[in-house]
Image (cartoon, one colour):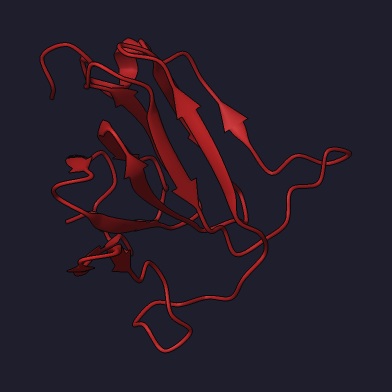
Length: 150
């Protein structure tokens, strides 16, 4: 496991009216504050990544659809520097992934319909000073293939 990454399996509580599942609680291990909540979507086969944050911690989950999340530890002082990790998060296999700053991440829609991902980062987005470092999703130096995996 990449140092600082947390995976929280999410429990779904269904009843005859629908379902409920908690994503993030202030008393969860690793909770580091609240900045905003947003939803990002991707069409089938679309990749959103690679990027990392200098200060922000992300907490992603899938609301609808299927996504392959990939993480790469590029932090110079990390004990897991250079490690890759993947997670398939779906509406049938729910989990929340806490991604610390400095860890590259992205996701690919691996389902037949649009995927809806929710993120609860600990900081608000600042368009004047974006806390985001991007690189090409096919950057060979990371050593990951969005088609075949690590």
